[in-house]
Image (cartoon, rainbow, N blue to C red):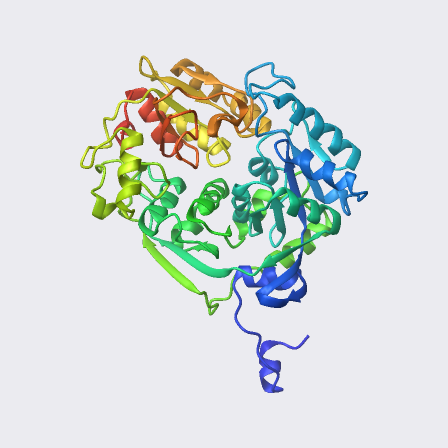
Length: 481
């Protein structure tokens, strides 16, 4: 192949500068279709028990099989019980059938299954990176809106419906409308107590929950490069709350170090060949995006939400905004305040809480638990506060227990659970109380998300831990010395 200089000397056209997304898209287009769509090759398909049996059973009923069973994975995570000693029964009415039918369908299809008691069981978007299932440059789909989490590994990952999952299982392809591209640069250095969760909430708070609608968003900048892989996963997880089609971060040496030796990652000569390919995925400096945003992070503070959308976010030291500063319509603003039981101008710090939750595909990895445990060590949860910690995978749980983190959580007054989605939402049948105020490391604070009329404030794991100790929404920096 000619070098760039040789191509120019010979009069050949120089390839147009390309972003990470551009490169992945070009490598996976099977056929261009009318209207800006394309038939795209799918490298990995992930299912879970809430929708997995629907796609698999429908496929079998149509007399079709899974085209590439080795590329398909399924886990029990959404409605599985997280209480110690769990089995197939869940607190969700009829939930047992979801688990048993998904198990039967997965075994019949010959796909990888991480069952309830499997050592590698966990939340889809936690176990996929930790097992090396998602790889740089791959296309990954799952019937779950937070599939974009996995874009942190340099992949194009997005959520689909059960019908799309059936098509992908049968053909290894999907019809995809090419999204527009956006680059969001976070520049500067994160201050004490400020995390990737705070970056995401600051972005959504400033530019709205629809700010990324129709875009594949590439996160870049000095602050993103400084993030470790698990923090990058948190940032990309929240891309769906920005209404983005996907969130991506260019793979680098941190990515490769993280992946090496993991269960489904390439090995030996295949690993070296993969590295050669992955190193070429980083976007070109001259790549053009349809939109660019730049956020300077040096003065960022820990964030917390005040309303019923992730865009209702503010620094923990701030007050509930006025209508004019809220970025919402009057109707939405007044509805959010009424639901949350708050008033404009009311300080966020000091709001009494009834419960604290650490978990979900956003913030339940080992680094999240370590940071929260560092705040809890030697302290106790305030009287009257129900506190729960749910590791994102059984691997995370084992590692946390090996490090003694579970003992820190228990001594502080947290319940210590098995892995699963748990009370990120109450599809599993378990919920917080009516009108209880909860501070949570999850990704959504919609009305009744964590229980009927439950009032949820989103924050980082360390802010959740600090608030649990204080019994009120607190600034974690006050406990960091």
